[in-house]
Image (cartoon, rainbow, N blue to C red; front, side, top):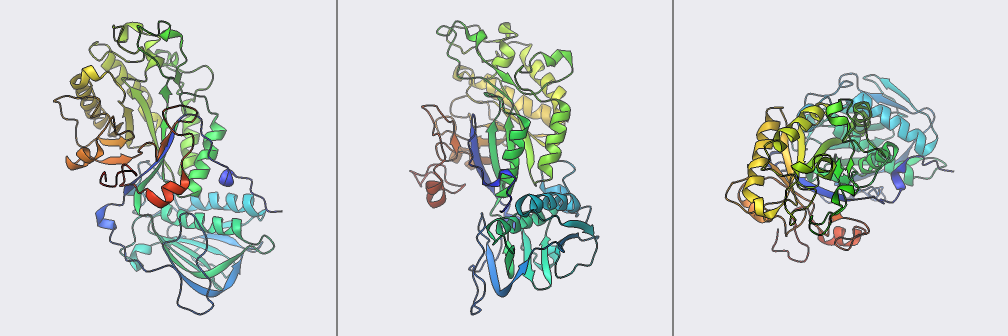
Length: 472
């Protein structure tokens, strides 16, 4: 029986909010030549089924078989990574080729029950899988996550532009192994040229409204990596919907989640009692996701979604019956220094060069105050050598203060942001538009499941509304 001891084939059943998005590959690497998949050779192997589909395939005849004699051979010249690795990821110290090989080794064992050896060498044999870099020297138009895959009677070669690109090649091989005849684990011989069309392929997960154990987060990371997503966005603080104070008198008693547990008593009190992650937990998780080709972008959402703070400091909430209890009062001189202190405490927990500050669903009567706060946080994080992203809020936070165009905006709801206007003014936009790519299970406002058929047939990352193709 085939062993699939990893969560590759599990259905996505997220608690809270999840989403997917993509940003185009930069134009400098987008000029990729293309030819139809398939082959002109008679009786040659057809294109293998993998997700996402291989961009280009030239089939040959015959098969290569995995066996107990198979080794994963890491090119000694690139075992510690290549010169292009670090510049194309959000995370510092990305995994290198040898670390990716260890992940692949574990995955092969989980899928097939065959234990293969990892060795570092410049030589490989017909039974081996050879991981190497330098694809850009053969193929200058291949973008930084692209790879060349060759399966022949001389062995398998995966050659990436970066270590992460080579890792995506191992995901293709792993999918082929899952679908192969388990009596022989035979893979079709041929040559693939594969690359992503979009530079950021993001999976966002709200882990604040409901507790999620770290083991589940690792399964989600494994699953998204399997399908060649390259970015996780984790939302660490939030609360179920809070109505205005005049209606919800007991707002301070409502559940609020803050999932980071500091040992600093100034911030430890905000950590959720049911589930919160320590600095060591996050260190181990980041190492785990790095070894699966993923970046992790952390988010602490403010000044709204902040009941985890206002329930301890009700004097920091907006003093009005028409304000929500989870809105911090940006007019209070204690609030912004506090939030900068929060990020000062936690920013070094994370290897990411990009930080999400949230900044959505705030009091629409305080638009310029919120916009000023957003720009101030952007400048503050720049001083910590971090870039900033936020949730789209430009429509619901009207004002005359321009939000800094260097801030990446995650578009999620057209009543909150106008993505076309943002693009027109030079803003970077990541598309998580509802209801197509953004869902909140078990609520009336959003879908329970992503409609995969609709996404496949109609959606593209540059389509902000499937029902209105002019809105692109």
